[in-house]
Length: 167
View (tube, rainbow, N blue to C red):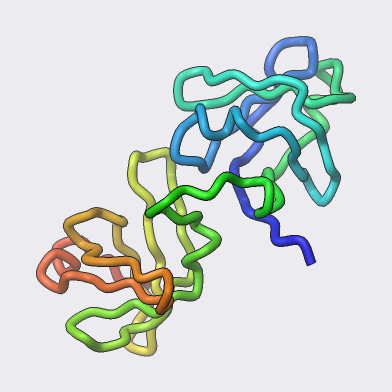
């Protein structure tokens, strides 16, 4: 089975030649511009060209040649995991979902979701028996992400400053 990874979201059409404006979920717009094949709503598209515009990316997909075609596209963008470059010491969001979240040596729950609301930092959502909560994924809060053991270890003192419980 192919492992698809969420890499961005379509915002809108751009211009009259079929370009679409993308909100990339990659580390940088340059990373996104290296992607050559995408899936939108399960349909495969070949990337004809891409270019960063500030914090967004403009994409031209093969076969999408006018504004109306571009406007018909909506939703999230996925890439086959095998097509993504490996980054030493880095991970993709998809890789850490479901990891145990540990604070003070105690498993508090698991990482349920990661969101980015256009800020420079991701927000991690933890599902816990003691109450679900979220926190910004700051270096000051996360002591370690242990990929091999599927654990995210947090620093209690810093977590307490930024933790937000769900109501």
